[in-house]
Structure formats: C-alpha cells, structure tokens
Image 1: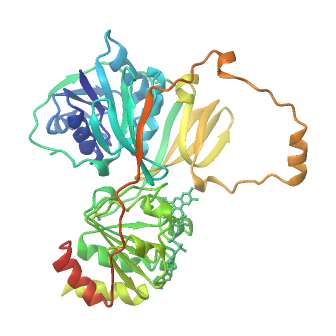
Image 2: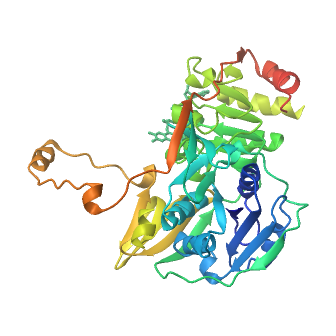
Image 3: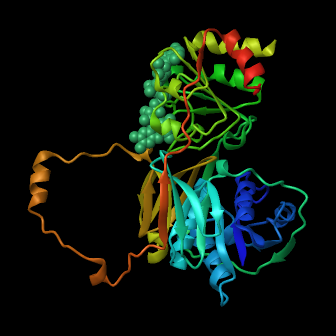
Amino acid sequence: MAILVIAEHNNVALAAATLNTVAAAQQIGGDIHLLVAGNGCGALSETAAQVAGVSKVLLADNAAFAHQLPENLAPLVAELVCGTSPAAYSHVLAAATTTGKNVLPRVAALLDVDQISEIVKVESPDTFQRPIYAGNAIATVQSSASVKVITVRSTGFDAVAGEGGSAVIEAIAAGTDAGISAFVGEELAKSERPELTAAKVVISGGRGMQNGDNFQLLYQLADKLGAAVGASRAAVDAGFVPNDLQVGQTGKIVAPQLYIAVGISGAIQHLAGMKDSKVIVAINKDEEAPIFQVADYGLVGDLFDAVPELAGAING
Amino acid sequence: MLAALTGFAQGTFASRVEVAGDQVNVTREIDGGLQTVALKLPAIVTTDLRLNEPRYASLPNIMKAKKKPLDVLTPDALGVSTASTVKILKVEAPAARSAGIKVKSVAELVEKLKNEAKVI
Ligand SMILES: Cc1cc2nc3c(=O)[nH]c(=O)nc-3n(C[C@H](O)[C@H](O)[C@H](O)COP(=O)(O)OP(=O)(O)OC[C@H]3O[C@@H](n4cnc5c(N)ncnc54)[C@H](O)[C@@H]3O)c2cc1C
C-alpha cells in the first residue's frame, strides 16, 4: 500500500525536514505520495515532484490551506486516507516539527488510531524506534493500527535528494474552511545563517554569555564556520535571544557534525537536543560542568577569552 | 487529539493567550518564530513553559479542596475503549557518549578539530 507524506512548506519552498521524512517513508517501503496542501503553491508542487523517491504529488491548492491550519488540513488528510474502501494509505508521515506535531495528532484522532511519535528508526513497516524520557531510553514499538500515523525526527534519517525525481502531479479539488480558526500573523526570525536543524555546525550560547549583545561573539565565530547559532533555555528565558534558537527537550533537536556549547552547563534537558551531534566541543569555566561528560573536546576557561581567540585562529 | 474529537479549534505550544469575546488569540512558539491564530471558543490550548508563572496552591485552599465532592468516572461507564494499538517490544539505553579529552588551549582545540575530528 502507499505512504502519504505531508509536505511542510511556506507555499514557496519545502522545509528541509520533509526530505528526511521521505527518507523514513522509503525505509518503510511502498509508493510514496507527497501531499502539498497550501495556497498558491502550484509552482511548489513542481519542486516537490522532483524529490527523490516520490511517485505522486497531491496538490491541494486552496485558501483554507494557506497556513496549514490543523482544523482545515486534518480533515483533508483523513479523507485522503479513508475516503475510499479499503483505505488508500497504510502510513501517514509528517516531520516532528511544530507544524507536524500540530497537525498529525488531529489526523490520528480523526482516523481513530494512536499516533507513533518522533521515530528515529524504521525496523519494519509496523515496528519503529523512538526516544522516550527525553532521549534517556529508546523504545522499540510495534503498531497494529490499521493506518500508522507517524511523526519523524529528522536527525534519525539522512535526507533524500531534493532533485532528480519525476513524480506525477495530481491536483485535488478539496478544501473547506472549518470556520473555527484563522491565521492572524507571524513573526519569523530572519537570518542569513543556515537553519539550526539543517546546519553542519552549530554554536550555542548559554547563561554564561551574560547578555544578548555578547552573542555577537558567537555570530562572528559562526560566520567563519558557516554555522548556525543556538542557545540554551536559560539564555532564551533571560531574553538574550529569541525562542526559536532554543536547543533541547523543549526546543530544537539538532545533530550537526560539530556542536560547540559555550557557557552552557549541560542540563539533561539541553543534552536531549544535541547529544547525537557527531563531535561536541564545550567551553566552560567550571571544570565540573556536566557538559564535559558528553564533550569530545573540552576547554576549561573563560569564554570571553576563548571565543575571540578561536575565531581568530580559524581565520588564519 | 481532543480537539479533533470534540471538533474544537486548537492552539498548541501557546506562549500567550488573550480571550476577546467569543474567540481567543493564541500566540504559538513555532520553529521559525511566533505565530498567532484566532480560535473560536470553546477551543483547546496546550501551553509552552514560557506562558506564565504557575500559581501554587496555598495551604488553606488545599484544605478546602479536600472537602470538595469527587466524581469518579471509568472508561467503561463512558463507553470508551482505552486499548492501545502500540506494543512496546523493548526499551534500551541509547548509545552512550563517553567524555572525551580536555584540551589545554584554543590552539590545541583547533588542531584537534582540524586533524583528528576533521570537522573544520
Ligand atoms: C521541563 C523543562 C524543559 C526544559 N527544556 C530545556 C531545553 O529545551 N533546552 C535547554 O537548554 N534547557 C531546558 N531546560 C532548562 C535546563 O534545565 C537548564 O536550566 C538550562 O539548560 C540551563 O542553561 P545554561 O546551561 O545556559 O545555564 P546554567 O546552567 O546557568 O549554566 C551556565 C554555564 O555557563 C558557565 N559560565 C558562566 N560564565 C562563563 C564564562 N565567562 N566562561 C565560560 N563559562 C561560563 C557556567 O560555569 C555554567 O556552567 C528545561 C527545563 C525544564 C524543567
């Protein structure tokens, strides 16, 4: 049977996590259909058709889907899955992002099945691995649900190529506004740097940075390394940086090639968001800080000396 | 899921909630920043830690609460099934990370990152 992947996008471009989600679908095995539900997203559907491994793009272009509000999108997905008998899809997948986590539980409830959340590995079409207790244990779970509704943690799967595929595009005439929710506005962070969850190098600052201005030190280093900048919850709560920079259990999950933690103590909730990074560097003046227990390279010292020195050394 | 079953609107990851007449404006913490949606009431809102300071129960209120009637409902009486379709086959510790080394200087760190880890 076929697998339905819900594309995440802003009507113009696909979110990177969609490519990791398609990779998970490939491991499950079967025809992969990508649902592009949006408004004015015709051109985007052509981009989506090039995603490797996708056989069909379902294009639902309607004002009701402009912001992928779950009240409007979930009924469409449920209808696509179960509108026919037998059901058209064995699996429904979305990225475990704030968008996927907003829509998919609503889909699962409409389909009357349990959701399987944040899988990091596919063992077979009905058996998956997922982290529990904030990543302190990995559970292998088997689902007997008629349709498996799954969110995918992108760090568990290498992205498929965004080009090279040649899926057919099928426009579906659907979309009603449930009339119970409306988009009011959004404030999106603009940054020239790579996106946190997709960056190869991430430099995060914690409470040790002392204030927002001092984050300039990290931005300067980041620009030399082509890195994204993240933060601990303490740094966000203190107002140093906006919340979308937060890494951890209640922030973003990252797994870059290199993670540099600066002035971060290494609380378990922070580690939950970055301990799958390939190489971890910690800079902290407290040699007892727990971050050193997970760091490949630890530098005990004052960050206000070490970070500029590091930036200088990388230049040369 | 509750919102789907009741047919209510939903506002997840809420960091700000403002009720205005028969609707509620919910500001949500999303991956790219903040998003505000207007939901018709009744609606289901799930919160982010940053939403507010929790109000702790005072001792007199805890005493008062003890006298409140307590209705006990069971899934059977409500006619709902709580059977799960998910079975846990096993639970393992994740691959452990061991502490690496402490470098003595920034120069040594750069050298290791370049030549040993090969990440810069
Ligand atoms: C339910 C829940 C969810 C949470 N989710 C998250 C989450 O998603 N992400 C997250 O990060 N946290 C999360 N937390 C918070 C977490 O428990 C910690 O409070 C937080 O991570 C601490 O941030 P920190 O390391 O920046 O601050 P601190 O613990 O205060 O550490 C600051 C560090 O900086 C060092 N330092 C200070 N000055 C210097 C200097 N000049 N040079 C070098 N080093 C210096 C200090 O030695 C210290 O180790 C959560 C907590 C709860 C309860």
